[in-house]
Amino acid sequence: MNPKSFIDTHKERMLNELFELLRIPSISADPAYNDQVAACAEHIAAHMKNLGIQNVNIYPTKGHPIVYGDFLIDPALPTVLVYGHYDVQPADPIELWDNDPFDPIIKATDIHPEGAIFARGACDDKGQMFMHLKAFEVLQAEGGVPCNVKFMIEGEEEVGSSNLGPFLSEHKDMLACDTILISDTGMIANDTPSITTGLRGLSYVEVEVTGPNRDLHSGLYGGAVANPINILTQMVASLHNEKGEITVEGFYDGVEIVSDDERALMAQAPFSQEAFKKSIGISDVWGEEGYSTPERTSIRPTLDVNGIWGGYIGEGAKTVIPSKAYAKISMRLVPGQDPDAITEKFTQHFINIAPASVSVKVTPHHGGLPYVTQSTDPAYQSASAAYERTFGKPALPVRSGGSIPIVALFEQILGAKSILMGFGLDSDAIHSPNEHYGVFNYFKGIETIPYFYHNYVNQMK
Ligand code: BES
Ligand code: MN
Ligand code: MN
Image 1 (cartoon, rainbow, N blue to C red):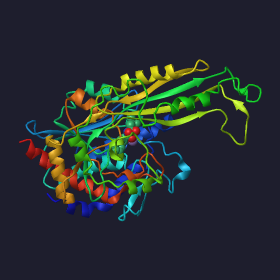
Image 2 (image 1 turned 90 degrees about the vertical axis):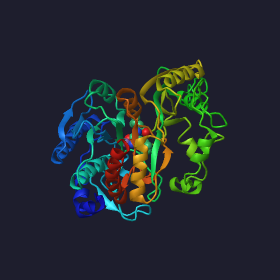
Image 3 (image 1 turned 60 degrees about the horizontal axis):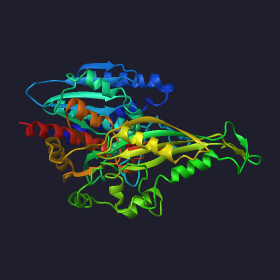
Image 4 (image 1 turned 180 degrees about the vertical axis):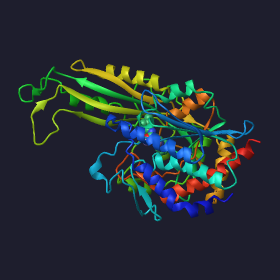
């Protein structure tokens, strides 16, 4: 098998095919794009059929459809289930993009001197998901696919995958597998491959603080009536103490304590605090006392306001005490924390700290369980050896701060562990304007994945 030479002769086409996929604005959060999301599912299904993948089917859900296809050669051989998502985040704020987010272009950057593909979904997750279809093509051309492969590509990851859990339960036999292969995370750097061994969970709530029953003149009433925005900001500020710890009653109950040995191992992964600060334009970091920056973004839970609004935000000045104030709050969770229990604790706490002058309402959004896996897992070993082959060094295990809620459900419902072979970089601006994905990373992924299959088949013998 020689993935490199096959890729070299088909580079241009493999890029053009990804560009076609990136041109479809499959924004799952905005109903105005429902037809485009459906068109994207059709596009992927058609591409799978062209590759010779069998039983290709588009499964409708209450939300966006799931694309499934498989290639089953021998029940005695292991089965790999590839998961990815074809939906993308909204492109806004659109005016901060340097190109049309749905008309991909290639531009060189400092980190990607060989060029990067700029488009919404380039890295998260169309570019990474599509590597798996191209890797399948490589396998077929270079001696054949060595085991059973199933593909499940969903269209609701960016909105919480709420219909995928039930789909897993309803199609347990169809989705039965030995391991799940996912490229929807990142790696340390283009010369430092890593495998993600943990994902944080998520609890996401929206809060509404209500004061007077209507907006009031801030001169006639100001000083005598609680201003919901003032109150909300005080309440939000009180959610962290001076040590950067979260004050929600019971928030840390059961949180898994990472051993000193493991923390020492983590500290060996290359990380520059200076480069970190510079890359996002901050003069100092912030966070929970007693933990390093990489620890704060992986093994520790967090609480953040994602949006806050209320009152007058239009042109000029309007003197008003608003009736209501709102905030969207996310909590990233670690092993030992349950999203529903955390949502409940937050709700209780937020009601408890509200002064009598306002009323509060807390509405839960989507959530997800945290996930961890071990570097002793056979799929991990196979992946690490694959990186060693194509990067010249084995991958480092790294726990990520992001969330892919379905991964914990894969383990619960399908009884299979996931191997997170992500090829993105933190600097690729996923969910942000000017999202991009390195051309190097795209082709390196396509080159590395075939070795994973071969290593895994050998490992499982
Ligand atoms: N692919 C990301 C998650 C990710 C990115 C994990 C980089 C690790 C490294 C995924 O598409 C995502 O954005 N997840 C959301 C959660 C979801 C419920 C909206 C997240 O982490 O905010
Ligand atoms: Mn993703
Ligand atoms: Mn995402």
